[in-house]
Length: 337
Image (cartoon, rainbow, N blue to C red; front, side, top):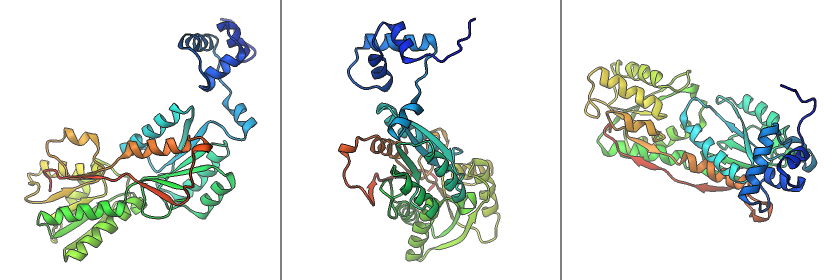
């Protein structure tokens, strides 16, 4: 096999496909009308000779690349896989590509990631939540990029936020559990409490219980990442105490599912002996033998709308500073409460 000493160029693709260099450029950039027959011929020629478009060079000419930076707190929970799918679908349709990093709920890592990702001159950036350090805010302001924040609307965004009220979700869950007659509660969370959205849900939950005269016996925050195994361990610990609750509110469905597994394995009836509620409404819940009471969140739609906003032409933008888009949520009354 003969190895090329130079990289294939657009001119090479044009010659192979029998079209002009301008036609190749339009196909690669997804701009202008090109027939499907010609488009297929150009892509086949590019694949045959190994041509890869130099998007960085294009970005250096325009001071921006067709990239959008995405900063997520974790990929250990399928919640953010759904969000990333929505972002990717919206960006791809507009000719952009996401590049992302994971903070593991660390403010210092977010600062580092934002600075690193901005060095690639993205056209926009997606941040999770509304709370960011002065370092991150200054870096974004200096870069002059468009910003979309996701997952939360309880606060003031840098530009435009797509999400739901975390406080309202906690309130709605507490109200439902109280309506079922439960009065003594425990809370189970993870990540050492660094998940600020979970903290806001707990705030709404705690406030609603207090107003109703109910008791939150304990707030149990694990230092470990969220998982079913950790939820099972925490549930066993909570139910082993003398001051036993009649209901447990979990920061997410992973932990709550672990709670279900503990109960099923130990003959503990739900909701007669203990009521359980989670958060997110993840698809795997449909496979459980017991339906979990939870809050279903618009994860894909949050990502999709953020991606559409960041890939929108400048001429279509309105004044969006400090505005939120409330996508709502849906409380699902399952068999566990």
